[in-house]
Length: 111
View 1 (cartoon, one colour):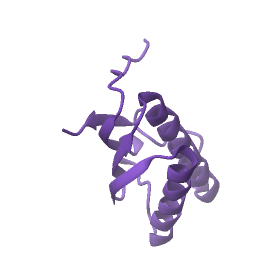
View 2 (cartoon, rainbow, N blue to C red):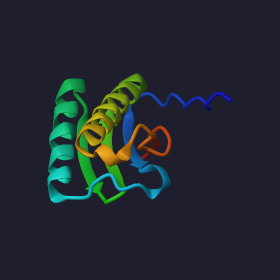
View 3 (tube, rainbow, N blue to C red):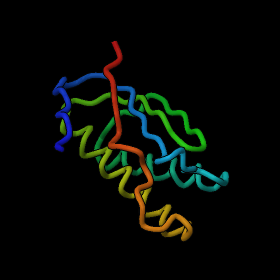
View 4 (cartoon, one colour):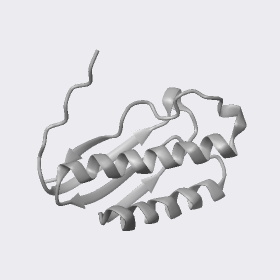
């Protein structure tokens, strides 16, 4: 069954989050938090996003970003999550080949 299309809200501020599949831990050691923050910094520069805030938890994370076009958000989140998953699989062999993130990232417009 196809996914429900995201609403195209254009530009704005977004609260974006993603969780580990089956409450899977995304960050087990302090170094893994640091690596994700470095990756996040690279992604902000690469896609010229504005990061206003973040909160990293063991099995999920929250970001507050502003964008100029909705397509930027999708491309940015795809790149960030894909790179992070590849790092997790490379560093944590016990993860296997299954999905790491529960679903695609979700976001909501901040007013």
